[in-house]
Length: 181
Image (cartoon, rainbow, N blue to C red; front, side, top):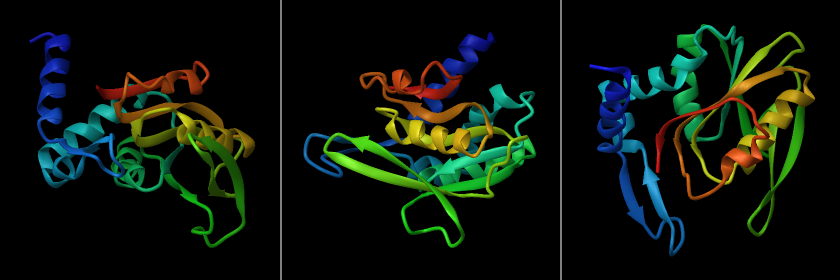
């Protein structure tokens, strides 16, 4: 089997475990629910291996995982890459000194935080989340990493929504997504 055929088979297998939930969290949104994939040990392992594979030889020292589904994927990816795991959370959730980054939403703004000592100047960082949509959250996480002087190697996602131009928000950085919708 060629690598292209393997990738297509993997994509089909993983997509079969992602449930569509119409009108969640609000009318008109088709939410991609990954909890059935996470509940399947084989698919969960395949997903995190596929998310980490392009970065195995990149010298990653820290995986920055975005709240909350990014945490679920970031842990196994950090272990696979033999890297530390650093959480990025919404405001007020981290107990130590934090660096804050505000970012734009469709209507208004939101904020993310990282511990000030989570990333150092000699760290090579991979940002992890479940989905790349508009790119606002991932871009803010990248700015947090760069603000702490870490080297932002790239981003990895379980899925990318191609009808939303999240890639543009990531400023030409290395981006990997296992699935595309």
